[in-house]
Length: 424
Image (cartoon, rainbow, N blue to C red; front, side):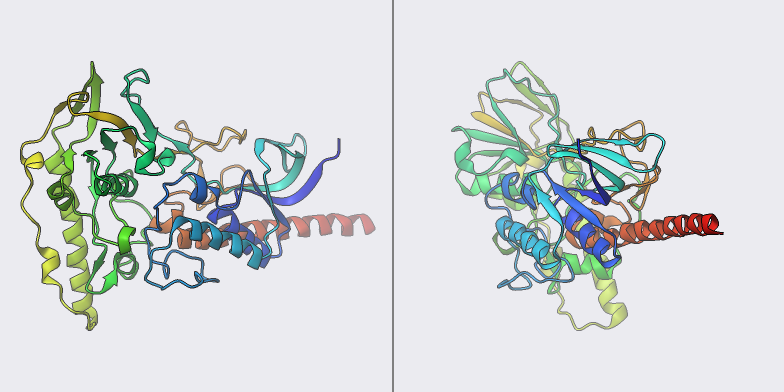
């Protein structure tokens, strides 16, 4: 059986894989990108129909290409984001093969490199970059049994209100996905319960600048490690309908019922933690802290940006916060479906090399793993806060490509030295 050989194999044809390909090409590193479906497939088939990017077009892109026919401050629909990456792959002439799944990777015995079993045959690679990111396997807590008589789906399987059965909907999770889906269902006339956990709630924009700009000039995108206790805190932000600051009190005023963190289900009764007011207050504190830092930055640098005192007005708590629901009979509330907007976990079952800790997370330094020749890209906090975002992964790819290129030069010198010794 013939075995194809490549220098560097990149697994994944999304934003991470394409960024990796661009930088490998710039470094002169021969490589191949494998994508099991289409380029940027998750944007097309694993997100809801109305999804738009959470950052404006000027920010959520690669440096080498703007979104065509798009205002810089617009929030790009998901299909146009996928089209953007497909066009980018063509622009950089990325050597990508779609429809090829990587099934297993093992280190070669007695010689450097890796054996890669794919759906299209065997490949041997000197280096391998796992560019599949961290959002691979949907997480659904084992709280409500499958036979509870409810439709239960993860947010990655949600498409639009029409796919859900009649009745009220419980959305679990108050990050970007959960709050946007809950808001869409509310606008569609559904009765919505939203389970709100700990979260950050930045302003969508403040003093005529988007929050992406503020996080940039304040140095928060470049933060190299999360603050203690914030490693898994979600961010409630949205680009829907032109971009609005998430305001849970406004959602409650419009008819949404807020509840605390989902804890337990038994005999048709869902139990929620008594932490709703605390979670809302924490989000408010994060919101105010961004405004405070922004104001200080404006004053320190003498910027001519208009003041926005209205942004600091926070309304009174609605009844669902002051008198929270702790136990809810789902049938009596008319709830026919639950959407679990509870995030994702990694899935590296195909990577049979010793690079993972006891929790299954990659052991690495800025994407360079503890196993020589194995690299990662697209992980949250890979080098900074912005690592899992479009622009952040592009910069991380540059570091990984430089490392691969440097190692190749060392190996080339070693091979040359051995030839010179034989000649002598």
